[in-house]
Length: 327
Image (cartoon, rainbow, N blue to C red; front, side):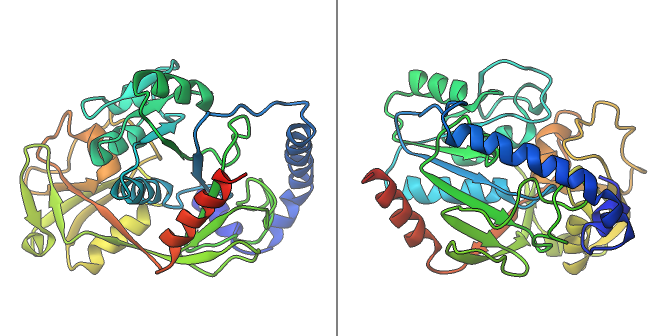
């Protein structure tokens, strides 16, 4: 999204107020849709097993996918057979299909491809998440629980636990789209909140979230290198994520020299990318971008994004799941 619009969303300035009337119409549509589901005129469909939805109420990157991965790994450590579903945003296909460790981002979406490789859990994508759930359960009938990556606003899929993630911008100016960053009014009822910036208002249990780069990078050839070993080398940094400046700032904070910092549109597929800037500069990118970039540049260094969550979150998640299963 344009930087000036993101900046405008952080305060209630002239542009935000100019767009405010349009946000009232948008808000009316959001509330009407939710009311139709609440009244049963639009029907939610149940998965038959517990569903955790990891999502957000703001536009732009909030770190949902790393949180999804952390939740899945926690549940796996508990011995649960977990499946993941997603829409598969940015893919060229439109059917319901499985994302595997060998899937291309073009066929399943970059985030499902990354989750399939990193989690070892079965991952299915479909525009209607319930279709993905049914296909996953048919293929993997022992699955005990579903984690939906994104989908807080996809009300057609009934859910047992809702987890809302906020980045360091919080709720911005508090306005709905297009006057602010909110997809729906906040606060709203959810089970758990994770926040990287100011603690958002609301009654749900909230836990602080920290994001940081790992101390190493790896490439498609199976090679691994410490970030410290890249200091002093000219690097061509790439980021096709919602907030590329964050990635570049994290690299610089590690003492790396960015000969070029190239921001590309979120979910960019690199099909028309012109190539790296000079043979001397090594490529460095996010893991999400690597699943697409490695098909052409297997030597590119991908830096994992690691998160740490305040103590108490996972017990609270287990408690929320326990309460939902008793209903």
